Image 1 (tube, rainbow, N blue to C red):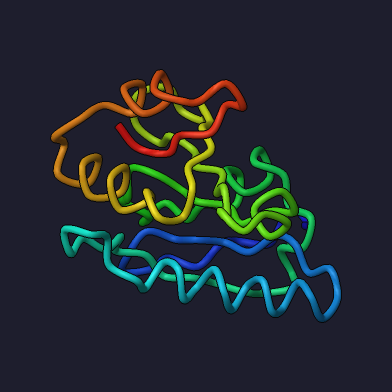
Image 2: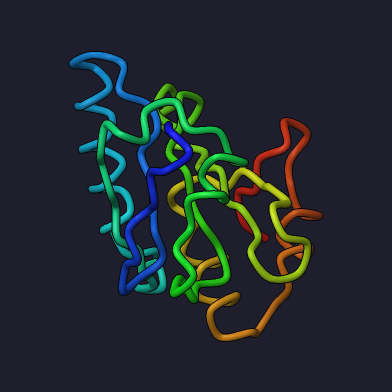
Length: 142
C-alpha cells in the first residue's frame, strides 16, 4: 500500500481486505462477508462495512493505521488478512483505536459482534477482549 492511499471513511466499522490470493481468496472473502452478516445465537451482528480494494493488498497494520482518515470515528479497525482468509473461523485482526492505539487482537468472525458492539457503546474495554484469548492468541468469546 502506498503512503498516499487513504482508507475510506465508512458509516460502520471498516473491515478491510488486505489479502487477494487468487480465486480461493475471492471465495474466502465472500464466505467471510456471509459470516459477518449471520446473526449470533442471540441475534447480534457487528455493524461493519467490508471493503475490498486491491490498492490495500498486503497492507500491514501500521500502513492501515497511517491510512485512516481524520473523520474515522470508530473504536476499531478490522483487517481481513492472509491468516483471516486461510481459516474457516476467519480470525480477523482487530486494531484498537482508543485505549492502546494500534494494539491488536485476533477475533473469529462469529464473535466480532461482541467486540464491535461493546466498544462502540463503551460497555467494555479493548483489553478485556485482548486478555480473553485462547492459547493460539485468538478471541473466541467469553
